[in-house]
Image (cartoon, rainbow, N blue to C red; front, side, top):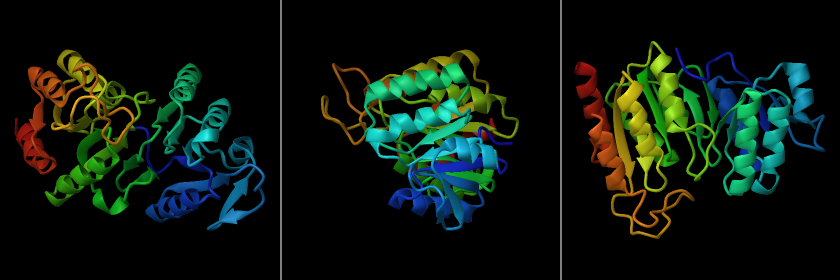
Length: 290
């Protein structure tokens, strides 16, 4: 099994006529994802790599029964694009766009929860269920089908650690990039609960980073309700206080959100924490043997 995404998802690409939208729509098609439609207001009637383009998500939904959207719309228009998908009943919405104002993100995340939609991102690489489908920008070749679920705040580290697992012969069930902004749709807690219910996911890898308290809150849930084994890696151990490291959410403020506080929180509930990304496969093998 997979979570959230499989080969049956029917995908619309919002912003498909842009450089990033058209490039990744083609790669998703080549991976086997059912990319059935694109949307760019004012560009309806055209095609991108054979994919029909419409002016609105409503047209794409009515003609192709799409249930999943990926958004490559610039930040200034991203709020309207996400809300369009929510209002048309799209159940899974992947927001690749970075630089969306936090107030806009708060509003569409709240609306999605009220309407029963799931948002991944913003500022994320997307989601992939190896061998089934990918809705995102991740390189498909680094992943292999298998029993390990991955949730990550870092796109690049997601690829790196998945590749280390694949090289070690350990495949993945579903891999989700949560996004590096302070506010995201799905959280570590949401994904842990989904993997806990998935019969074919045997263990979970969490890839955290400095800033915020998402990792500490995830540790609390692991200690209370997650039965499956969890391995973690936390990036940013040498980051100086007050300096933002890459992501908008990756900043240590007033001593909170440090890598060491997150590592301690995980270890306090029995989670194995890797010192380096390349150490993750050995820790996964160890927890699977228990």
